[in-house]
Image (cartoon, rainbow, N blue to C red; front, side):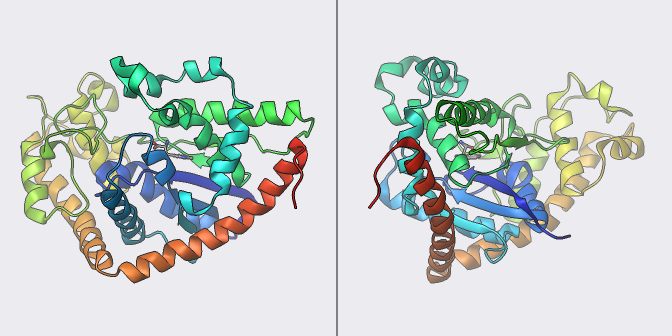
Amino acid sequence: MSKNSKSVVFSGVQPTGNLHLGNYLGAIKNFVNLQKKMECIYCIVDLHAITVFQDPKELKKNILDTTAGFVACGLDFKKSIIFNQSSVSGHSELAWILNCVSRVGWMNRMTQFKEKAGKNKENASVGLYVYPNLMAADILLYKSTHVPVGDDQKQHLELARDIAQKFNNDFKVNNFFPIPEPLIQKKLSRVMSLRDGTKKMSKSEESNYSRIDLQDSADEINKKIKKAKTDSLPIPGNIEELKNRPEALNLLNIYSFITNSDLEKILENMAGKDFSKFKNELSDALVATICPIGKKIKELKNDRKYLMRILKEGSNKAGIIAKENLDKVKEIVGFISH
Ligand code: TRP
């Protein structure tokens, strides 16, 4: 398939250290597919990370580990642009300009800020508050047309669309920024915790048993799946019957995604089966896919030079596009460039 030159895919991933199954199935696996069809830019968003305090040594390590994870999962730095956000200064520069386009009323509607800041709103960083404007800058800096995002980022993408529209209107530059479209995976927009099927699988959940890390051993994967929460009913024959069974749905969804097969078909074949038996098959499928990725991550982590080279190459490529677009933005806004 030839790449569609008018489409630009952009997405960002936080450098949180060890990537887990949710990162892989919910995002990176899709990134790998997209790079075959479109121009793709994948950014490790270190500027976003520091909206809550990060230990500097940890942050550096996490950026490199995330890079290793990207490559181990199949992202190809020759096909896609892979880089860390802070190395292209255009992100911060455009974010400031967009801070002045975006409205306080819009910010105040952002549910993720409310969740993250919680009761401690007065003590949250200002960065955390304007984080969605930086995300809009990430996307618009490359005039991106498509943004693969999970459920939890839909509202931020809506905001990026509003900001793009307002910029185009305010400065009377129709179509300058394309209005970015979300790319939401139809079948699976999130992998849920193995302990609670209503919560997203997350690095921040305390129990290790809630998630599968990409570097888990076969033993660990088996143990975690064995312990994963289910209910007492067998596998039903149709999706409808999974409605109020979040844990059962989650495990079946994971199986469907990891084996690239339709959930409907799986249910047809497995209806009536006990979850304990199904769990064995799920573990086998996970081990077959995840363990080779984990092994590759471990190898790559030992090759810091190679990881640095990937980020440098990506930053150079991203920097060229960013500069061209940012120069135009500055001209539109009325700045004088030298
Ligand atoms: N906010 C996103 C998250 O927490 C990460 C992100 C930053 C992003 N910039 C982006 C995602 C631009 C898509 C596009 O997951």
